[in-house]
Image (tube, rainbow, N blue to C red; front, side, top):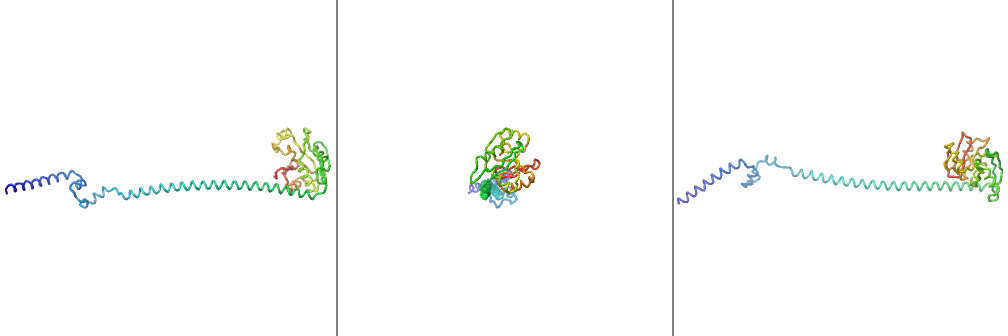
Length: 273
């Protein structure tokens, strides 16, 4: 009995010693660690202490989600912009091709229309076509029938080719027959009964180069070099009236040089200057 009482007193004394050691130890150990050590529940801890240690995981998660969404939005925007740029470039390419094709068809239509008008005019003229030309540089004149009964006459063409030769070198070249028809129609259009004064007909390459050095108005490869152009003057008839009549024919190029008092006509593309 006495032994049991002594063991009980020793046990109570050990508990008191353990309690003093616990209270001493608890002053140096953080509350969170102490709570975990002794098995305290989370509800016993101070709310303020837990609030200071809380890193707001919900707010961090929302922030991360926002950054993720922004990244995907930027990628989608960049992809959409890339597709839009490609579509725009493709549409512009098709539009340029359509415009080029339309210009090509328009030029061909104008050329066909000019041929049709010229053929219609020639079809209704008399059975003979003649030209009366005068060269101001050689003082030569020719008045000849160059077409009759549906065909061009070799003798008449030869006489016209010679008068329209390069007067600097005396070189002769076959002149485009359409140019003679153009002069014939133009002369009848303005009802000019006098000889057309010829300032320049055929030009050889060396003559054209020489004239180009003297004037910027001379083209590097003028149609004069191909026998497709002529510069004419109509004494007694204002050259502006002659120019308007030539433009109205819509049959080749027309150039107006009022200071030098002459008009250029050719059988090239329809253009005016």
